[in-house]
Image (cartoon, rainbow, N blue to C red; front, top):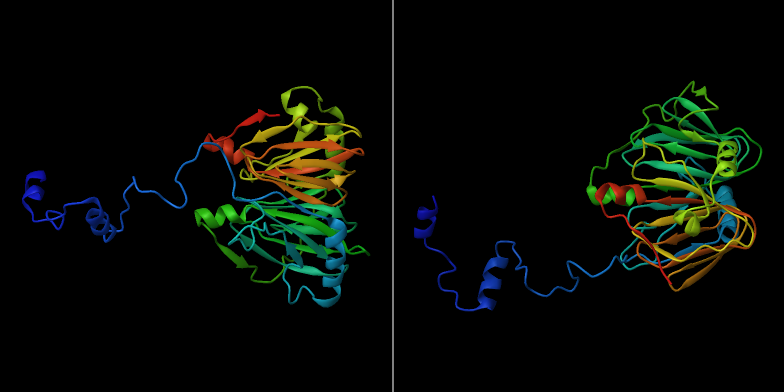
Length: 328
């Protein structure tokens, strides 16, 4: 076969310089590997195009209250505000692999059921009486809970309480867009009927259980020097989103680190400061901030604090890309 190919006439026989070769091969949708590119294919150290950002719950909550007055779940399937990282060309992602949003539901409302490829979860900021129906099971969503919706599970939300409920959504939607296995559909009946209430379930990580586990957690070790007392509540049903809860006593100061993982932090208790790259975020209850991959990060607590960290750490480990190191 190679002898036959060598005897065939070639458009490249008359080429006498590199520029002519580049123009000719471009017609075959090929690019020489040696040419300079505006965006290099490789670089020396991990660096995200996404930037550190801080969203203040005290500023977003009034907007959610206003949304509750002016738009219903009949028009807005999910009454939420997506936390868009302000980099050029981005219109929804919070980090490279994750997107977050503040969401709210009014007493008596139902947010109709749907399902999608993306894994999703809710960190409940303020709620008494709201719930999530996941594959026919009704799971309470009380303040401090983390409620899971693995990919391709039917899910909708309702509220039997008497005050507006607020939570933080996190999905691996940017990752799904990158890999392109997206599939989404509305429930044929709009709502999962006759759902069975289930107080204890793998889909619901209860605040009381989180508190117990934090009380028993160790404050020693390298990871604790960066992240304080930590419990890992990641679900094997949602391997692309690592879920950890950190507890920091008033006055605690963590060491500075860099990590090959993108992180979204949700503040459930207390206040403090996090240095993320060149930014210093003074956070409080309900706030959300982002620490992109590769930047220097250091946390400190002003008051006793509990934060939920939502990251792609597990994904990075699976790919062999993970890394955590102390820095100045």
